[in-house]
Length: 178
Image (cartoon, rainbow, N blue to C red):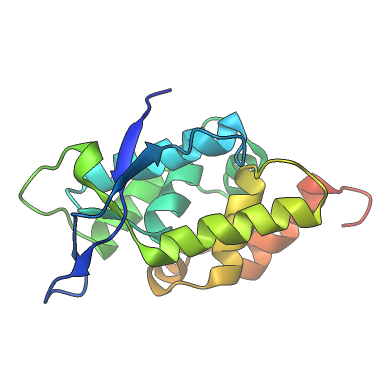
């Protein structure tokens, strides 16, 4: 798995879809044990989607795409079982948030405050389930509960409802209770 860094936001530009990098760099994926390896892989893939689209930020929608593009983890499995593939996700993301002309290095990308909130919610979800680290299913559930606009739009473009994702996660995490 590739490791590197990501920037924290410094200032907002006049264009509300672009954050101006310049904040401090933090390891990406987080190097501590707050996230499982499969969740870290999804975070890296989310950053890769931002790079592919030449977006200068990683937002919740990029995290959702990262989970969808992952080849392992309960979050990725839930999306696959709902018919979501990495190709479908990329096409839908391309239609919602077109690529910009200027390519960026992964280390120059900014983590949005909403994406940071998703990470925080996912850690809280894992602790609530008495697990030491957030897994991809915690990230996916946090995305469903955070309700960021572009994430909802991406789900809509994939013909998936947030409630269907929650239900599928419940089935996979606790088959007896679903």
